[in-house]
Image (cartoon, rainbow, N blue to C red; front, side, top):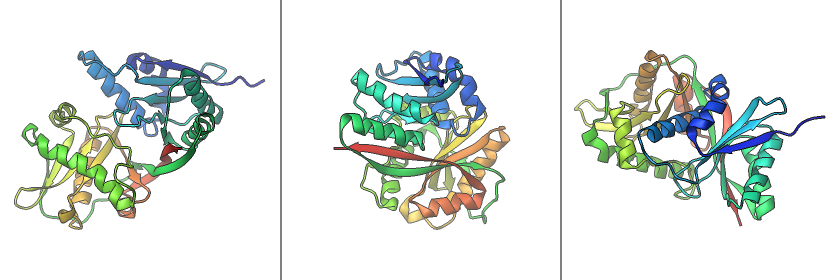
Length: 299
């Protein structure tokens, strides 16, 4: 007799990490989003920063008690989509039913396929409406870096005095991602960090500019601190008037060199609707690992 998976919700990131750390560390590339976000939030909590009371994390266990899946709902942007890691399909369905019993209204689901789709379909069945794909994403990992043709300029870390430009380019990245993919503005589920968080990332040395031959910033690449040995690059943004000059490829390649020198494996997400970025990263040596999706429930 097969025992159904069990779901354990928690609101403490440290409690979640204690339960799921071995699971997250076993496949740190696929688990990069949950691992990096949770560790960042645990660090902020240790600094005395209050976390939203309605944030939660989920540990999925099989009949033997082994962790076989995880999820979280920590997104600060509406409609606060939960993010699912791979899990058995019956666990994904059970998760949607648990929301329904708890009276928790979920109108979007992000994460790994097919779990995210199974969960969203069940949520739509229970709460009404239908599921639409807002964005197909693909997670890639760097195998062997293939440097692009060199261009003028150099990579340098952003400084705290440049936080306004960093904030503007973080925000422009989300808008441009939708425009380039032909989607309505605001479709992509990208977090734009607040000023305090951006300053933390800058001071941690995780935001870089590519500057042209005269020292003017023409491109931004950022990355998350490594979690379980994996660092995730993003966002990667070039203003429209600076595109097509090789800035992005050279900047990402140099950031990858820095992260690899720290001992980290490098991964990143691409929008499957953006062939330009997919060709760029394939040319640099990234290979696809898993398909994910941002799904919305519409009435």
